Length: 367
Image (cartoon, rainbow, N blue to C red; front, side):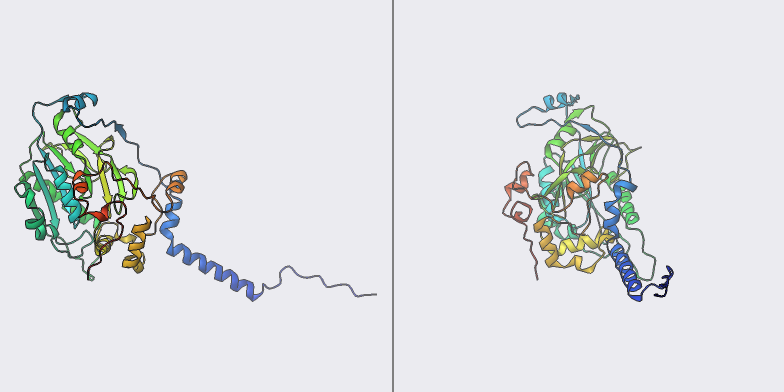
């Protein structure tokens, strides 16, 4: 008769190999989470964040050879006997090509181009005064219309606590209020508040300067492009605004100021630079510089591949509030072969601005 088998105890020791594998998996998960925390956060954004309240969109009517009076009537407004004065106010960094296109495009309608630049970036990095050094040769065509000032920036020091770049940006926007007053702005004038790469269309400016009854503050919905006009993203750009100036209430801002937005009012071309070095500069200089999480993000070869393929420079997911829109926009931006309804000065000078048009994704990399 065989002896009874010894019952195995459930509490026996776990083999070392299983412990090692479990620890390895945990370390890999932690490393993945650390290196991709932004991606993980953005992917689950629909669960932890709520979208901002929706805008009330005003239809925008325009066609060639239609009188301004008729266009005003279509919008529910009436025509003025004379146009409002227009002040185009921007804080300038280094977007020389886009500034040149913008000013040529808007010059027939603008009274003063008000431009503020600083000797440092929003992140405290010293920078040349790009506009000042190019004013005489590239912007002589607008000389009598320019009101320009230099804001003394704050240089970042390793021995001091790093200041919030959004605060440094806010200081410059506050200085713009004083510069507008020096430019001679008066109550009732039209002032455009936008970044250099947020370009209102000429028909938008003409409509707002000639029509009576327009809202005192109106956001401008701009068609958003990335890297060039070959990569249209969507109509999500809303920060540009048009104001009927009030000395009591108007403040220069780049944030939500109204629930009203005028549809299809211009173009927003983000990271639309001629030189690869300009991509690197902006990536490290603007308020979202913390998105550069790895040094290889600044490699010229990587940047060139990305802007020809329509991928994200920061290897991030889209900032969306529903999984449907998030999944819809994941992956490269779809390339467009259309160069219709773009700034006329850009098309007139297509040879100079090939890098902004379909088929011109290769950038310059001077020695």
